[in-house]
Length: 437
Image (cartoon, rainbow, N blue to C red; front, side):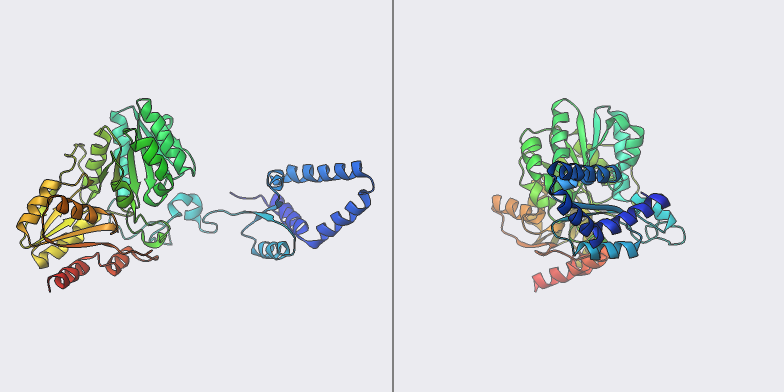
């Protein structure tokens, strides 16, 4: 958004006038004079509101008791600082309207502001992303699947709470505008809206970040799960999110979804598994969630053909001895790396709910140590589910659960954050060796 030079200059002048003592003194003096003639005073007040309302949306905010000032150009720092200084001297609640442009001064960001909402490494000379080595992100995998699935089933509806670009819905929105709904920053409405559509025979897919789905937990439980409606939750940014920090970390979705009746919860370990599990979720006649991390995958090629996987079935990716590592989602690859040194068996569990009970029983009966690993809070997560399953089967086996600690993890490079939490190969090896000593 930009302000023309003339309008911007006028607004800045008015901001200085409205926020300064000059305006206050002028109005208070005039008010004293007009107070002796009440009808004239009332007319003057209405005239003031009318004039200010013509130039800015002040009336709405002033009805709430704010003194509205602006809009002003947020890139004019001298005016902005001066205005903020003057506002401090005014009594009562103040509402300062500042207009800025995302990426202002850097042309690639001005041309494509959505791309720079949460930006990774890029070449400043042209704005191109670097470091992915041609690998697709999980968000891209989801976006491609959504378009392909929509071509096969006209009942598919895409819903997002103001995260079309971040969740990978832009191509879908362009190709199927009548089936795309951006409800704005209203996660609760997005979920209830999906419930209504599912009740009417449609197949909603809600694309949402893990951290934002927390805001709609009540609606997920009462409007979706309680009615066992076929709604797919495509949960992006699961686990740690690097530079986005603790506010955006998807640390809790396995925990808060696993306890909800009727939910099927899936955690793909690579790009192709993500595509196939999304298809599996879509074919399921009930609520389901597919959670995947931020950023690129491992470079695994995706199969164009979509095939539903058996719900609640994992598979052994590496056969070893003594130690069995049950990996959930993104943790499969560090588990495989650690297993080479530990000579451990590694299972790609795929499903957090329902768990593959038969596979757990088999591994617990043939190994002396069961290790679970997940990029989710340990409390109530996938590992806790495995422990519950072992208890229900009356199986006694040495166990070790690895996951995110009971704390908020600050911003950082994703790989460094995982290492700090002991969720890289070295951390797994170290934890296992300590457990066996």
